[in-house]
Image (tube, rainbow, N blue to C red; front, side, top):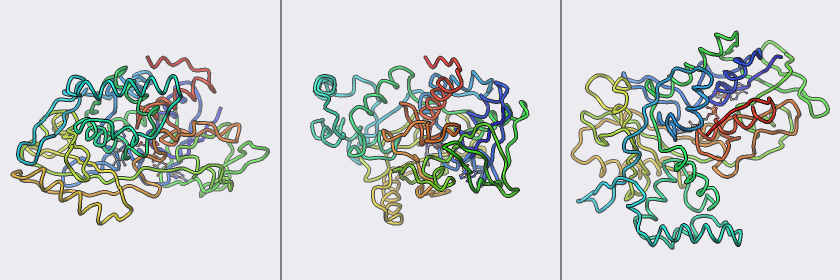
Amino acid sequence: MKVAIIGSGLGGLLTAAILSEKGYKVDIFEKLRFYGGRFTNLEYKGFQISTGALHMIPHGKRGPLGILLRKVGSKVEIIDSEPEGEALYGNEKTNERITVRSSVFPLGSKLKFFKWLLKFKVLRANPYMDRYEKELDNFSAKFLKSFLGWSLSIQPAEIKYSKLLAIYRNVVKYGGPGIPIGGCKAVVDSLAEIIKSNDGEIHLRNPVLRLYSENKKVTGLENKNGKIEYDLYISNIGHQATGKLLGEEYAEEVESRGIKYSISLEKPFVGHTGVLFTLNCKRISGMNEVTNADPNLAPSGKHLLMAHQPMITSNVEEEIRIGLEDLKILLKGFEYEILAIQSYFDGWPVNRVRSGLDMGYRTPYSNLFVVGDAAKGDDIEVDGIALGIAELLKREFGEKIDIG
Ligand SMILES: Cc1cc2nc3c(=O)[nH]c(=O)nc-3n(C[C@H](O)[C@H](O)[C@H](O)COP(=O)(O)OP(=O)(O)OC[C@H]3O[C@@H](n4cnc5c(N)ncnc54)[C@H](O)[C@@H]3O)c2cc1C
């Protein structure tokens, strides 16, 4: 059976690797000159910065992506973070660091979370989190904001209680983040290798220009060489862009936007492999220092620090100005160089579909499915992508996948 995959992001490559292992003949079409989409490395001055992701996998090797990577035979090594997270709290002078674990949240706020759970279960109350945020103590409220800004590039007003609960349950189930040795590129390279070893092909600089359909079935795709027919079509570019290829806008997506700073340091600032949540900043939500897991992500003797902020207004320059001010305060006394400032929106966002608004893998077309961060399962980022793919494979391909 011949399968066309539109886009070679993590979602497209993971699906292609699994299907090619099952004996499907996969052809991947990618419009750019490289594969991996927002999950690969960009080399700059000897540093492995990235096209998107902060070189982190939300649940490390124990999560849905880790499980699927092992299932498909990927040899990528993932270092689970230790500690999983720390919160930078206190005032500018004290800048106290607190290891994030259940015991650091005041009992009152923990009880509130369970009160909301009761209201959710009994009364089906499911408001956006800004309504509940006001009920929390200062530390918990700031942590909530920082966690959402770092991991989803959103504000409490943009996520419902039920989604936060699902994220919390997944953290309890799978644990915190991890860093792949070699960064994002090591993950996508390992998938590309599997695809090629199964006679799959990745066609770079080869955008899909149009999809043809008849009676709600896709009958072919058009690329620079003309029309080609396949049995199945998997799109990795979101529902909205897929609709455009069909000439039918069947879905509208709300993306989340953000800004990432890649910073060179002479000595470590974070000092461990976890996330440092920055609770007192105006914009920066958190940082990681991936060279503590893999020193080869920077030239010898240097560290690569990555900071992230959600984009709260649409004024990119002003957002960056505020972010840089935060960094100046945070990194006072440290010698640092900003290597790159990358903004993510308009089709190259942090999240193609904001967490909680995913539309699933199905489309109005019987042989066309969507994978990637517009069709996540009930988890976040690349682990959400993996769950979405597991669901597709289980329901449409009869694949038995045990995600734990
Ligand atoms: C700043 C930032 C930080 C992040 N940090 C993390 C993190 O640390 N951990 C994490 O898990 N996630 C993180 N994410 C999210 C993660 O990067 C994305 O969710 C993930 O990479 C999306 O993968 P995808 O396969 O859905 O899509 P994409 O990576 O966008 O892939 C889609 C591909 O399709 C191609 N394409 C588009 N149109 C066409 C066409 N017509 N024909 C052919 N090809 C086409 C594109 O060029 C692209 O290569 C971050 C994202 C950003 C931006």
